[in-house]
Picture (spheres, rainbow, N blue to C red):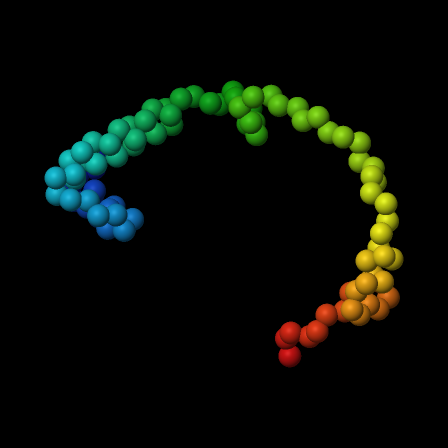
Length: 95
């Protein structure tokens, strides 16, 4: 696919980018290069390739899932302005 100068001006208008008449040809060459690269990527046969989430086989080291903090809920509720049944009460903001 090859873009015309009119295509470049239309793309620039849609993208809200100001492209001067002197820059149209240079921008067209750059966009055609990008589109050519995309066409080359699409031409690669990937039928036998398994999808992957990352380019490198990465394994994360995970820590044990255990509680490390002490329960301070009662202390926090004691200094709260208003609580009920273990919940913090706040003023109503929507009528």
